[in-house]
Length: 543
Image 1 (cartoon, helix red, strand yellow):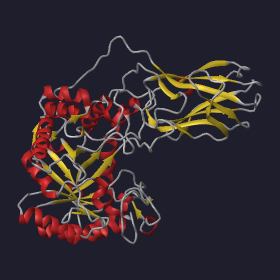
Image 2: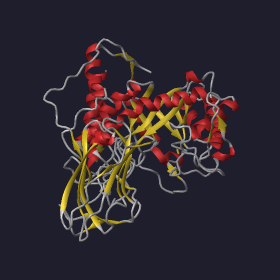
Image 3: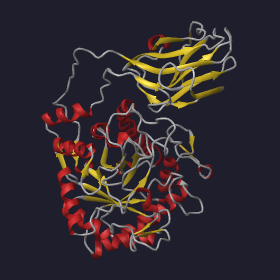
C-alpha cells in the first residue's frame, strides 16, 4: 500500500469537496408532478388514483382520493435532511362536495410530528396549502422519511384531489461563509482509494493490442491505482480457468490474462473476487497459485464472493445466503488460498446493521452481542462470531453501497439529484458500525481487520439520465471525500465500462441531457462520462 500525507493546501481543496455542508437549496423538492418523483413512494392507505386525468391543477395528472375518515395519503422516502427546505406545499380540490378537513403530519426517525389541521377544501376549485416545517416540528431534522395528508372526521368525505406536492426551498443566501481547518491532519491518503471495477463482459477492454493500449491510456489518464476483477455478481458464477460462468459453453470477452496485462501496465493494486456461489476453495486456491506462484503477478487482495448475503446472488449451497455457512466455507477458502501464497490478504463480505440481511437460516445460529446482551440475527454478527469460533481471522471486511435502486421502466421516478447529493454522509456511520461489530463479535485481533469498499455508485438498478450527468460526478467526488475522513482503506467505483441502458428514469426533475443511462465511467471505446472527469480531478487533488 502506498500512502501520501495530505498537505494543508490539499486538505483545503479536497475536504471543501468532501466536507458535508447542508447548504440552502435554490430549487424546490418535487414530490408529485404528474407522478411521484425524487424517490418518494406511495405508502397511502385507502382508495386513491395517482394517474387521475381530471381535474388537474397543472400538467396532465393529479391524485384522486376517496377515503373514509382517518385514511391517509402518505409518501415515504429514505431518511433525508430537511435543512434546505422551509415548508410543504400542495394544491387541493374538494371536488363536487368540498368541505373535507385534512390534517398533515410527518415521521422522522421513530417520532411522529405534531399534526396540523387545515381549512376545509374548496368545492370544485383548487387552493394552495403551505405548511411550515417549523410548525410541524421537522425543520432541520436529518431523518425525515414520511409525509401524510390524512382525512379527518371533522368534515365531509367525498372524493377530493391533490396535485403539485413539493417541499419549498429556503431562499439562497447572499453570502455563504465556509471555514476550513487546513492545519488539522485527517489521515494518510490510501492509494487504493482511486479504484475502478472491471468486468469480463467489457468488449473494449483488452482483446487486442489496440484495445489494451487504449484502456491503459484511459486508466492512466484517470489516475487509476486499483482494479477489481472479474465483475460483481458474476463473480459467484465465474470459473477463472475456463473464462466461463455456470454451465456456459462460451467464454466471456475479457480473460484473466487480458485483465492482468492491463493491470500490470497501469501498475495497479488488484482485488480479485473468487467464486463462492458455485465454486470451491480448491478452485480459489488454484487461482492464487496460478497468479502468484506460477506467474508471479503478486496479486495481494482476494475477496471471498460478492455480496453473498443478497438474494440476488447465485448461491448453490444447501443453505444459500446463510452467514454461518458462508463463514464455515470462508475458513476453508482462507486456509487453502494462504497455503498457496501466505503473503496474500483475504477478505469477507459484510454489511452495516446488526440485523441486516437476516433470513430464515439466520434463526438457526443467532448470536448475542457480548457488549449489549442483545440477540441478533443479521449477516455480519453471525459471520464474524462464527469465524471467531473457528479460529480464523479475515484480513479485511468488504462493504458495498448504492444509495438508490431503480426498477426497469419505472412508473414513477425513484431517484433524486438533490437527495443523492445528501446521501454521502453514510460513510462515517457505516465505518463506525462495521468497526463496532468487529469489536463486539470478533473481539481480540479484530483491530487488525481492515475496512474496504469495493463497490459504490449512485444506483444499483436500471440506469437513466442521472448516471451519465454531472450529478453522478459530483456524487463520486463527495462520496470519496466523505469516505476519506473514515478508516475505509479502499474505494473501488462500479465500474469502468458497463453498457448503454435506457430502462431507467429520464424524468425532467433530473439534470442532464443524454438520452441514455450507463453506470460505467466510459461508454464504448472512449466516450468519457462526467464521472470519469470527477475521478480524474479527485486523483489530481489527492495525490
